[in-house]
Image (cartoon, rainbow, N blue to C red; front, side, top):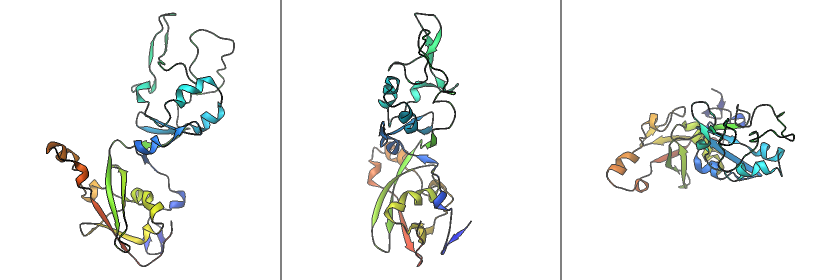
Length: 228
């Protein structure tokens, strides 16, 4: 692993996030910045929206911008759910919000252009990462400045990925040693793998508010000025 000053870690110039929280997806909720999630993955449909700008068939997709649309899909086939059309008796896509882009019309039409290749929901061309199935809140405390920041992170994320989330608040985050209860954290491991257990179920069982206790990670400066 390469060294940057005193710190070994990934090259954040080319770093790609693996996980996104539902709250992050929800921020991309308009045609000019359109994300959705389905079947555990996150997709940036902004290029699709730009390509078909003004098309009425884009409207049902814009209406669900920033949301999870897994209920649109059959999890076994990963295709749009289908039903028997009462008019034709044929098996057709089920679109309660109305027909949308790349879904064929109910009856043959001369203006139906099917030269788009694969439908937008097939393949990985719009995929940006995975949806966090479980999120956690952590406090990050800079012992040098006493600044504290609470972040929502994915439970499957490594400490490097959490550090990447923290960079907007401290560009020198990789110049710190990250610790929890006096132990140096393994940056390639998750919170759970570092012994920072998720106790939400215990709090629920005790009928206690889990937000009353948020694990605190302490950052100790290493006396170099690595900027990521």
